[in-house]
Amino acid sequence: MKKTIFLSLLGLLCCSQLFAQATLAEFKNSLKTNGTNIKDVMPIVHKKTGALGMIIADAKNAYAYKLDKNFKCIDQLKSNTKQRKYKVLIGSQIEGNNYRIFLSNKDRDEFSSILFSFDTQKTSANEFELAKKELLFQTFNHNEKLYFLTGNKTTGALYLTEFNNQGIPSKKEINLQGTSILNYKGRPTSIAKTLYTISHKGSIFISKFEKDTPNAIETASEPVKMYVQGDKLIITFDTYKKETQMITLDLLTKKLSKTSFDLPLQNIKTNRKKTNSFLYDNLLAQIAADKEVFTLQLRDVKTKDIIKTYSFTKKDKIPFKNGPIIQKGGTYASHREFEKTKKFLRKITAEKIGVSIIKIRGNYQFTIGGAQKIQRGGGFGVPMAGFGMPIGQFGATTVIFNPTIMAYHRYTQTKSTRIECVFDQNFEHLAQDKPMENVFEKIKKQPTYTSKAKTIFKYQDFYIKGDYRSSRKTYMLKKFTY
Image (cartoon, rainbow, N blue to C red):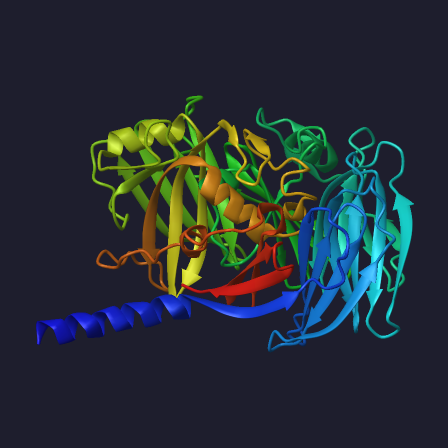
């Protein structure tokens, strides 16, 4: 009887694991005939049809494979127009049955786009460049189109560039109407100069966030965050400890507006105080802490009303955590657990603090903590120094346009101290609930055959890991769920 129960439980476990990670597709990279290594892979998801374009690139060529919504490979094209100086994949857009990728040189001032037309069975390329002293801060997609957010830190001008079906850029200067951002001293600074400073003088891209994708504390602790919500581009600035500043750009009217939200612990003036925020739909989560006290404040963005506040001191037990305090990525142990609140506050305020939110099965799961600057291997064969994401991180840098792979990379490589917290729809703490295992942990446990051909991306409500077996010239797609 016991043996029967054991076998039944084992069967259920195996079924659960199979459901959490199923092979969706395997297809031959038959267009590749040379012996050079794969440099990068770019997934392009057609959100309206469910079709998927997989662009596999080596030093000379790019190979496009089109998969239907059932992940069956139905078409393929090869481009010989990829120039060596364009090493950085920075984005893509879809034009009906045609897929276009965008690449940059290492200085991010000269660009090329390659069109794979599955209608005409032809490929073509065109080139363009930024104006002198213009910097690219980030790229993003809206309605299957690619946009550049650029600026000039000297003049303070901010630009939005979009591309037509021929890949031709159209740049528009955003009317800032005197809008400025308060820096860490509370002094007004232009948006462009602030982005220039945060991007380490243009050497890294500002962080962008994808809804319900898990984020490492290192990513969430960045002071500037970009979100695309519907027809709006939103950037939050936690550069000034007294308030979260938010600019919203309507992508249809191109009008920009700014609003600010007071941060908690206004009465504390110490330099040890750390603050940050995270935007989830219409919810703004704001945190503030020093070595003595911590406050989590939840606001309605539209009304600015405070929905809920949670606080604790170093003498209290943390009233809203689910599970132990976790320290990850230490020098002598990759995973440690402890319970002392005083130690938690000391560690996170010695670092950059952050909060992130995902919604799983109807409940909100918050990750709160601090991330420390470290010098270590980048996990994909390239060193990572401190925060931000320099170009050249993943082969040709899929991280720039793919926030999922950026989140995965930082999650698996960061050194952090954190707690996990579960709340219901009304943001009441669910003390008895166990936090869901991060989907990235499941992906991390799976072996990788070719690191530079590895990609991770979100597809509908699940995640896909792509990997390449060079000995078989076969690309594989696996599904992962919570």
